[in-house]
Image (cartoon, rainbow, N blue to C red; front, side):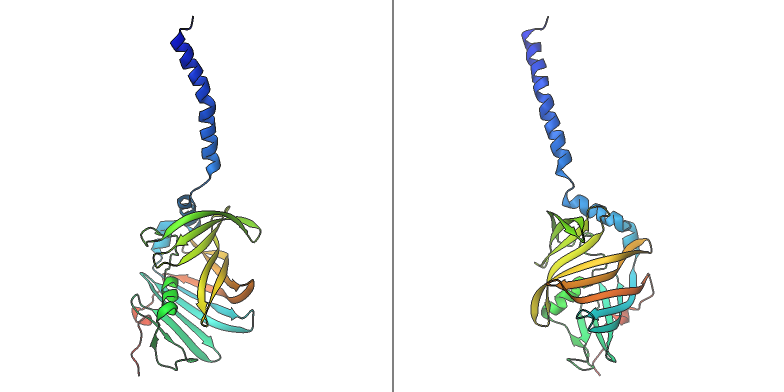
Length: 253
């Protein structure tokens, strides 16, 4: 025969069962956190060890501007910790933009002649962001970035997680991570181009393994739905020998 106390305990147990079930269902429906998505995205690319093992990258391809109005061969070089250089041939002239980890500089024959000039303001800041070989998601906390999950949205007809990245420098960009492959498929950021600020949507695709890391070979930046700058890489090489002097600003002649 059940005592009064055992009846109460039995009743309490029956009462707690549905509550426990509700908590379990809620946990299952909550889905991944921003940190979970970042971790899976890094793993999908090849993993943090393989990403960090790449010390330098050389990319050769072509830029297509204005929806096909102009094409230009381009070579881009990266070297850890934060050096970058881009050489673009336009109408027989070579535009150079580079950063050696301290100074961002350019040789622009269309505006400044053949002499190297220091970049300043937003131009330099944008170029410095581009010098991050690993991208904003890798080591984001150490870089001083904050990432929050802002829901889901379709990209090219497929669901993608929407990650809001508040950067240390005060800038904000949104990175879309495919919900199935966990690869980055799109970024949205405000950039200053030709004196005007515009919101650019950059779509990345054609991922191929380079030294065990999946890298996009095609990028298309659009404003208002129209292509502004697209780049396709014919060749990407990892851990090539690149001299530090390639990134240093040359002395004026």
